[in-house]
Image (cartoon, rainbow, N blue to C red; front, side, top):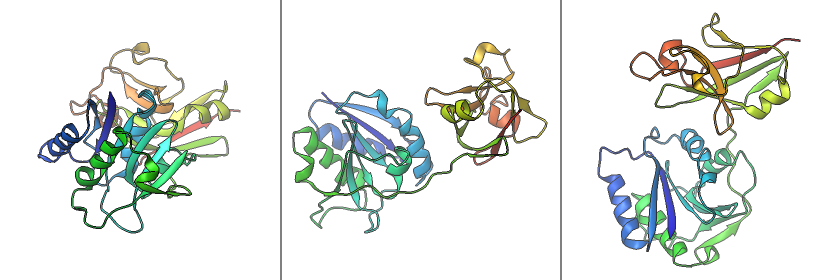
Length: 266
């Protein structure tokens, strides 16, 4: 069975997503299709990379991942197939893959050899799906692309440590209104360790001084901090739901790109 995932900004209102799936079902034999997300904000590579980053390693080796975000063809961002840890990714080489892999090197990067008569209006369907179909049918990547040194690098927003403070940024708000930052569990362990600390939220009078292991370690409606399965610091409300006044983003007034600080005591 061929496992093929799609991460896109196509949404579910129009027929575009169904058209891509129809092409895949027609061209790829014995396919198991997995929708990662189709509600990425239009052209938002950083969001797409964060979403896919948190799930692609859960799939079996040999899986194929289509990235249908910011796919307009241009010479500065050619279409590529990227191999990483036994997985295959296809998308535009516009900096997305450096965000996806945290600038770790890929096993191989191939620039697709286009004939010149392809329909570039909807490459997710007209180019990416047929290429994945050929790979699923046993075609070697070297037959459809030219090996290049690496993918293009687009630096992401990184947390900053100075003067016993970690300054991070909110990079994602999920469907529950949970606020996810770019502060990693590894960075927290290295800089904070067992020292007392205060997590200062957007409103300076709102602080947290403990990391929970689960949402229900605090009473319902109370705020908490914990690390996601992907290892990112999250601010949440136990049983809070975005849109009903109960999510951390709404209730605490924290939005994407806001600063979250961790003050470390000596």
